Every structure is written in C-alpha cells, then in structure tokens.
Length: 475
Ligand SMILES: NC(=O)c1ccc[n+]([C@@H]2O[C@H](COP(=O)([O-])OP(=O)(O)OC[C@H]3O[C@@H](n4cnc5c(N)ncnc54)[C@H](O)[C@@H]3O)[C@@H](O)[C@H]2O)c1
Image (cartoon, rainbow, N blue to C red; front, side, top):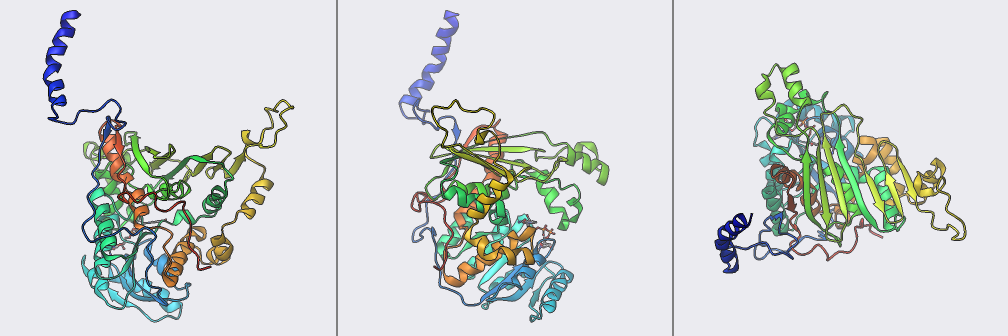
C-alpha cells in the first residue's frame, strides 16, 4: 500500500509542479467552478451597446412581412387582421399555394392582398429587403431562424421569430450582436408566458403571495406521434434524430424565467441535464416508415430530457422535454416559494401557508392550508384578485380571436402595442438567448455524463441593471 502511495506521488509530482508554475490553470479548491464545463462569453464588439430595456421610435402603423406559412404561420396572419394599426404587406413561403391560401385570409377580412414571395429557399430575402416593412415575423422551421432574424435586422427591420429562435450558442451570440449593433428589437414569439394561469401566477408572485420564489418548473411534454408526417420536409423529426438535449425548451423556460426575474436581478449560473434512451420515435420509424432497426436507433434525442439550473441568487429551475411518450399534454409550470406554491398541470391550484396560526394551538396536521390546494372558490377568488392588467384588457378579445385559447393573440397584440408606443418589448433578445441556450447547454451536459455546464451571461455583465421583470404600459 505504502509503495503504491509513493508511486502515486512520483507520478503526480510533475503535474503538481506544472500547476504551481502556472503551465495550466489548476482547479483551485475554493473555485466553485472547478468541476464545471466553462463556456465562452465573447467580448462585446467595439461601438456596440446592450439592448436592455430597448426603446425605439413609436410606429403608428406597424407594417409586417410574414415568412413561413405552414401549420403555424397562417394563424398569425389571421390574428393580425384583428390588431388595429397594423398592415400586412408581404407573405412568403417556399410553396406558392401556401401563400395563396393565406391571401384568402386577407380577402375574408376585406384587406388588400399582400406582396407574394415564394418558389425558392432565398425568396424571403427579398421580403426583408423591402423598404416598406417595419417588422419581419418568422414562422419557418428551426433551421434558418437565426439567419433570417439577422438578415431582417441588418435590413433595418424589427424581428419576431417563432420558438426556438436559435438552436446553438453561436447562433444566439450572432443574434445578440446583430440586435446590439443595429439597436433593433429581436423578440422570440413565446406565447406560453401569456397563458391565463401563468400570467396570473406571475402577478401573484410579483405581489409576494408565494413569499420568496425559490424554485420553478416547466416542460414541453406533448406526444407528437400524430404530427410527425405534417412538418415540411420532415424537419422536426430529423432535428430530433440529429441532436441530443432539450431542443424545445422555451415553452417551459418562458414562464419560469419571468417569475425568476432572469437578467433582471438574477441569472442562471450552471445547468445539469440527463436523458433517457430514445425508444418510441425509433420504433415509429421502424413501424411507420419501414426504416431498418440500426438506422432508426441512430437517434440522438432522448425520449425524456431533464435540465436543472441553479441561479446566482440560489434558486433552481427544472425543465423537461418529451415529445414521444404517451402522456397527457403538460407544460408542468410550478412555482414554489417560501410561503406558497402554484401548479398548473395536471391540476391547476395554489397552496399557501397558513400565516395566522395561533401559537397556543397545536397545529392541525390534517387541515393546514399548505398541505393541500386551496379550495376551488379560494383559487377563483385569488385568480380574480390577481388577474393581470394584460388579461383585464385583452381576455375577451383574445378568447374571441383564439390561438391556443387566446394566448397567441395576446402575444401578437402586446408586440404591436409596444412597437406602436415605443415601449420595451415584453421579451428581449437576452430572454431569447437564455431560453434557447438550453438546447446546446443540455446537450453538452448529457454528452459529458451530466456534468455541470456554465450558463453564459448573455447580457455580458448587465443582468443586474434592471430589478424585477415588468410589462411596460403607456400609463
Ligand atoms: N408557439 C407555439 O405554440 C408553436 C406551435 C407550433 C409551431 N411553433 C413553431 O413555429 C415554427 C413553424 O412550425 P410549423 O409547425 O408551422 O412547421 P411547418 O413545417 O408546418 O411550417 C414551416 C413552413 O415554413 C416554410 N419554409 C421553410 N423554409 C422556408 C424558406 N426558406 N422560405 C420560406 N418559407 C420556408 C415551409 O414551406 C412551411 O410552410 C417552428 O419554429 C415551430 O417550433 C410554435
């Protein structure tokens, strides 16, 4: 044993000497990042400033060009026909028949037809180059989101892009740099932050109803079995086949990030991810598409992926992704604080601490409020009391127009309202960055046996400038 120890010391001596002489950076005992995979934060290019709280000149009538008219895009065009102070100037899709189908939405709304672009992978560039468009609205597949956003901003447009707007850290930094250089808005179209339970709960959290929020959860659990054949050119399944990690994290991240005030007083520091092996989609490929077993199982994306994040202020976020298991739809959405708890799926409810328990009375273990959800009546009373101003103003119209129960309309309406009034948008480019970063960060963690990965500070030091997440209003 002693010989072995001596041998070990002899072997380690050059290593220790090298460390002491500064040949390479040795992990310091007190360095909390010594077992963390570090990520780069590229220096901000000279002459460029951050876009935190960005305000731009008010636009009376927001002129819009839409790119991508598949399953998602035409619904957005239809919603815009209900938003005053907008003009639908141009429509683009690879397929001319999809543009034509969408023109009919304008016909039905008694609006003039828009300029049409189609027939090539690059036709969207001509749309971005027009000088009568203020906003480019992108609802194509994930492959070219970043490229399209960047091109639109470089041609003087604000840009809004479907989720996820970026798939890699390089794409994210390129979008941030373009937004900072051009001082244009780059908003990710994350609709779930406007859903009724989520926005009410955010309002409750902002009023301290849950005490200090310590933990939040979110997910995208949606069995896409019946949808796989509907995506243009099979892009979605192919993306999942090629990439491991949480490739669709933003629906879970959005509401969690807002309640956690990310880059408004807190920031994500480290992420750890883990996944199961893939089974159901490879089996789908074998059964539905006749793929041979070996090729089908060359499938990167795990069936169930979990990411856990710890923040600077000592809080945690848990995000999950599963598009293959036979499970009820769930975006999870939980908020857990020192005084209370909110839960959306599968049962929406609140549990709150019984603050006023008389100390002389032995607590009644069966009936303490926070051991179970408050009654349906109390929940309704809370939701009415804390109904968000956005819902007070828009709920009826949103439910009439629709789009995932109304939240899509609220998202579009708020985007236009803020542009018209020269207000900061509800979601900025750093939100886009943080929510999309899970795709690559979770992949890196999983591919290193769930090692901890550093989450870059996409604001490059500005995460504490704004205190608390808030929506902007004119008055
Ligand atoms: N927020 C939500 O609730 C929600 C719901 C569904 C989809 N989405 C997102 O919306 C986006 C689109 O999804 P989808 O279901 O409509 O996919 P889809 O495959 O049905 O539609 C994509 C469309 O983009 C077009 N397109 C692709 N490349 C193009 C190019 N170079 N130029 C012009 N058009 C091009 C295709 O022809 C197709 O019509 C994705 O990012 C998806 O994740 C979001």
